[in-house]
Image: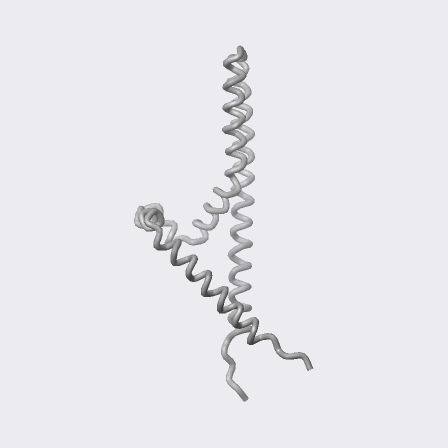
Length: 138
């Protein structure tokens, strides 16, 4: 009684694929991206996509703690101008060690998340290939 929805879902999926293709194409045609991919680091990361994903996840995850640390350093420096010069070295050392601990933990999280993302991508890709593969009519 109810109409089948796969043709509509297939059309929506094709539209989404077209939009993603345009987005990826505009990203790949960016001059800064092209210059980075020609560099030795870019070529190495291009040959090692899991490492590139891990680095990307790590950079994204570490942006907030590094920003907080820099804010902490600036505020500590302002406090040192007021007269706490001896305490500044100790506080920045403790802050630096705290940042080191946080970044080590974030590198572990980034590695786990990139592994999860890669497994999820492979699983979703396999499922989509299975669901939308052309099948012979019987």
